[in-house]
Image 1 (spheres, rainbow, N blue to C red):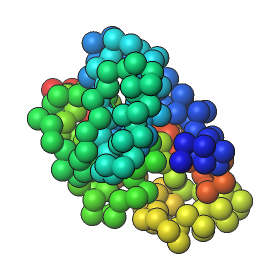
Image 2: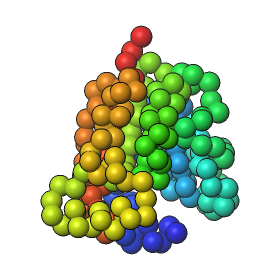
Image 3: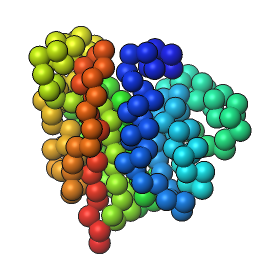
Image 4: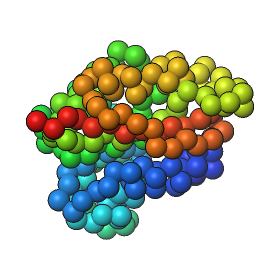
Length: 197
């Protein structure tokens, strides 16, 4: 799985950018939502060792791989099973939520629920950073995105609606940071902030 991601999705490039945009501070509490095999979780922890980071994913088999990777690197990272639209965390407990290639797996309803849940668990002023498929920027990206559209819940992604869905959940300062070309279509990184109290 990790090999395929590196080969087809420019994983190291966009995940490093995601971590850089997160501006992690040593006392931050961070959730990697839909952590998969924990590539992003590990990258963030190694970039900022004093950060408290948790990984969560709905797939128990993928989490086994994630735990083995963390153990091999001697990193103490809690990795738990859970769904993005029913977060098992109290309100206002995270400074940052990172999400990489999660939203295109979710139905429209669960995308909305996930944005609402992320808004809830972020502290006032907290930041959500998302890397996922977005509106194709050119003809090649439109063509490539047709492949993924057949297998995933990408309709809202390809219409460029994810940032607007974040706004509807209450987020402010929604902005795009980067775009990448992959074998499956255009990838977009955007951020959004929960308003301060």
